[in-house]
Image 1: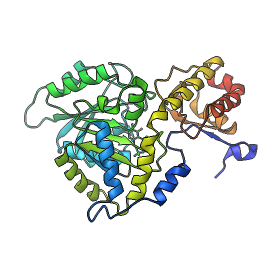
Image 2: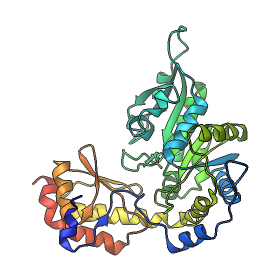
Image 3: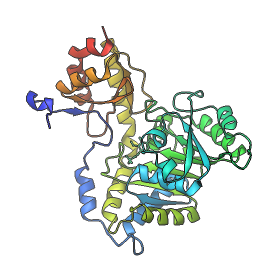
Image 4: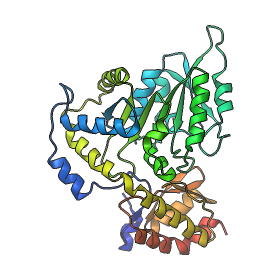
Length: 351
Ligand SMILES: Cc1ncc(COP(=O)(O)O)c(C=O)c1O
């Protein structure tokens, strides 16, 4: 494959995602030394420890390790939905557009996107109430689930503040909806508000969190909820091919990843620094709420090509460029990226 930066004797600065991090030496050591069992036959002790720790952190009764965030969300949707149901989610939610429609064709729910009238990445409680509607004739869809996303990836890592979370869950419950929270980056939402992660799961029936986004684990997510639901989730994980044997090797990585939670604020600071730098060049960049920055540009394909050529890797989100600083980059790397971007500024600001 042609990779333009290879011509430049320049180390690429990879801002495509917070999933590009490599396991740290201490994480690799913990993986090598992990106590393991067989998590399909009975339990893997290290995965069991991780599940307990995450359930505790999130104030949920139980947790189940799964290989990916997509599988965690799908298992939750399969727990909650029956064919003929409808589920609601904020527009551009990961479960709507980035999980290959599995909420519909595997979990059986008809998705409905709610525009962001409550703030970036979230609907208002009134929208939830309206969309839930009243039970109709037997041939109409039953709206049974609200799926929230905090932070909201494609809105630019935006946080649903605790007060908004509460009223949204309240509206869902009043309309007899079950609530699932896609918390792939719930840790970031909590860090941004100075809250314990458990504060942001208030009232939800299930939540999915990732250890591979910003926390350095090579893989792994947890789906959390009541004990009986998690027993059923274990069956669904097996059904989807996600049963693992010596999963403790990944569980150990997950336990180390949780130790990195206190450093997430540093990634948020790197993202703010990047945004300030871009604004200094006249490039449009909002003040990021967490670790994701969406910079709208006149021509995303052209801008990405130029960035790649300068050794700065990013991804498109609609007509914007998405930058995600992470733990494998320092503030000096962000400054280096800014130095590489400066000559390209006319392209990114369209002047
Ligand atoms: C909000 C959100 N949910 C779910 C996922 C899926 O996670 P995974 O890539 O581990 O399947 C992602 C991935 O980036 C995400 O951003």
